Length: 99
Image 1 (cartoon, rainbow, N blue to C red):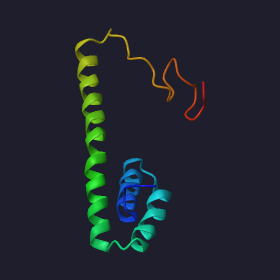
Image 2: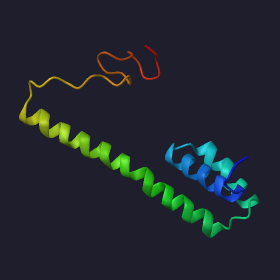
Image 3: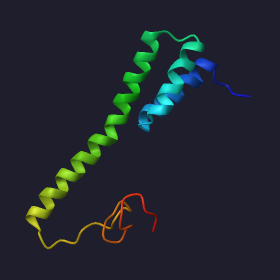
């Protein structure tokens, strides 16, 4: 048994959908939110808050990338960071390929 109400669970799901950039999830959960009794303004506010939260790590990634550019400029011989799996030298050879 959940301690959250249907409305609260829907708001959490909307936040997760926005945070994970999942369009099908957002398209599913907005009508569910309406069925749970949330109004357009409440849904819009939840989406705006979720977007603000989502942007914090995105901004941090952008700042890290810009800092890496500066590091590479100052230390051109510095070794690259380990590959993350999206196609770097020690990761898969193509995007989407599993190593």
